[in-house]
Image (cartoon, rainbow, N blue to C red; front, side, top):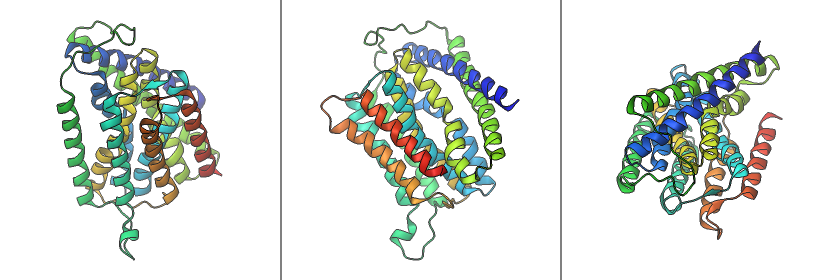
Length: 318
């Protein structure tokens, strides 16, 4: 029965991703908003809803390690697994704005996370934690960052000629229905998939900390994976990339910020190795943008990302 429900959940995720991509692309065209901005905001925050729910409920329940582990594992999954898969399907070109602004912002958010959970490094005997003040500052930074990105990008002509694809024509009501219905499919499908995958893992004797970093993180990131792959297949590479970068920033600043504001978070079983992997994922994306002549995430980089993720999972579960 659990396997059947896993498949049902996967079907809802794929259908939801398709509706969300079409609705978001139509919204971008209707209001002349760049697709990257739609990916960075509506798609990224929408597909991060499962992470938000899991982390906030975990914080309320006093399970700090699950709240942090969910975000840490999701960010690792987003870069190494999602961008790895997307790059294998089709190399992802990086725009000038990606290189100058978006990827550096992701790097800064990752550095901030590591700094906030390293109290003992800066003060001997201090307890590593993300406090309420830290959470409030993170939320303010997220609002400022999104506002700044939207303001400097401006309202430009949404173009489909570069990709050779056609943006679906929809009226306002249908756009809203497609986006809301797509998000609902992603969230409920992801929850169905996650609940049954977790039940199977527990039956096999997998520990809670490993479940948080792998199954919970991967399960709550399934909406990002589905929406990014579908966006890429529909020729919306900017939306796919914006989804991943935006989700990672939202996971740290918005989700952990909100969770820490509710209740201070301590890493618990989440180790320095795990936080280091978050930093490595941001660093490699930064290096890919700045050091190679071809400004794109190519297939060989996709293979490298996937191999790193497989190695991380092996190290975590062994």
